[in-house]
Length: 356
Ligand SMILES: [Zn+2]
Image (cartoon, rainbow, N blue to C red; front, side, top):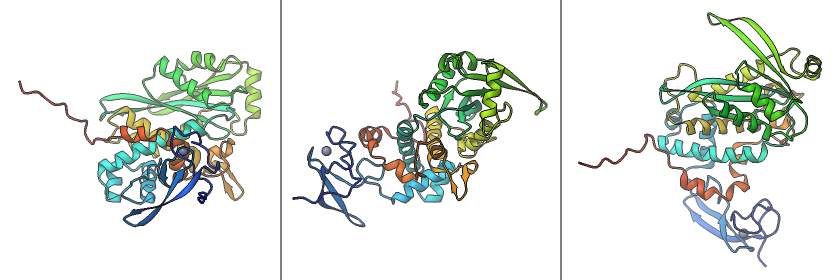
């Protein structure tokens, strides 16, 4: 009789019947493998007879550096340190940093998709901020959203300010909610929000616009406009709100600032914009996971405990760390594909020119 593995070890084989189950008793100990620093435990699944190590299906498999180093690169990146600076600080090559961050983003994306759903949207604020791709050659926008009550950042999108992108963005916010309740939504005066929100959230929601008149870089007047819903429903929503006493977009503007601080590509007057849209999207996905699940939010302090937005929204019981995000076992199924795809180049690969 083989000795059963400690609980929490599941079979990483995506085609196995027991995949994704952690306490089914199908995983047994299977000797050790030799590595540079000593030996590592191996396991065997009795259901599919495959053997695997403790790091199979995680980004730490066959990593030539320590796990904490991988985590530290991700941590530095979400503090707004750019890839070249991380490479210098950690003594790694630029390509290694880029590859690790791409992997980290893929896992963060999966973590978000799995954990960031089924919460209640109460008071939403939406906004977009402007940035550039390819060293200021191409202007683009980062759509961001916040559920004010829990401070959760439910969705984000990078792209032009078109009706189609606005639709995709608003739908992705609605997808994270549990479907019940009708939120109070505040946006700026951007024209595509009203038809899209009416279509996605229905006429049951309350939608208001906060329009700022700016003269010589200063706000001279703030006007509000009710688009969907009635005055009494708006005042009801504001009375129930714990954070807002009048219509505002202060919370999303504060989040925009946090995003700019946590992303080297979005710094103001920065000479280093993302080359590709995908790179910016990847970084925002990693940063969103950290913002929602890892970093305690100073506005969510309750006595000695400072909660993360996900804890406040009831999506998590504890504060997660990078290791939790990167080793979440359900990520194993398609991990091989992610690993295969991730080839980062400092430069775009040159096209091969044929000699005439
Ligand atoms: Zn198996």
